[in-house]
Image (cartoon, rainbow, N blue to C red; front, top):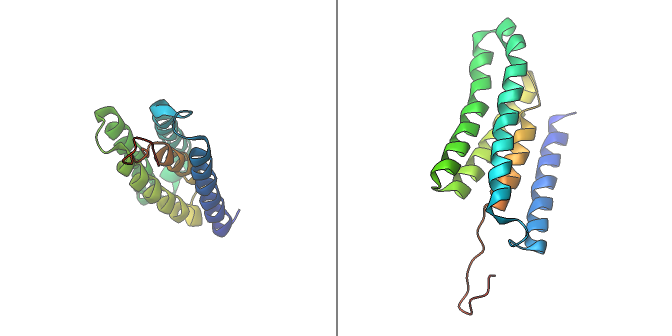
Amino acid sequence: MTIGTLTGLCVALFIAAAALFHQFGRSATGPRVGRVLRWLAFAGTVGIAVAALPEALADSSVVVALLAVPVVLGLLVVVADAAGRAVGPVTAIAAALMLGWGVFLAMAFTPYFVFPALVLGVAAVASVRPRRVAGGRSA
C-alpha cells in the first residue's frame, strides 16, 4: 500500500464519517461514541507500538523515540476526554498530527499508525457539537 493510497483512504473515511454524522444527526451518536473511539484509538496505538518495539529496538533508539510520538498523542486525547476540557479540538488536532506522523512512519518503518489516526478522526467528527440557532433547532 502506497502513501498516496493511505492518504486517500484517510480523506475518504473522514468525509464518509462526517456525512454519516450529518445525515443521521447527533441523537443517534451521543457523547459515548466519541469516548469509545478515543479509547479504542489509544489502545490500538499502544498495541501497535508494543508490537513494533522489538523491531524498533533492533534498528536504533531513534526509531523507539519515533514510536513514542503517537502514544503521547493518544494519551493526550484520553487525558482531555477524562478532564472533559476541549475534547473536540484536542481530538481533531491529535488526529491530524497522528495521521501526519503515521504517514511519515509509513515511509520508513510501519504504516499501521495511520489506522488509529483514522479512528481519532472519526472520534473528532463525533465530538463536534451541533450549533444552536435562534429558533432552538440545531443547524
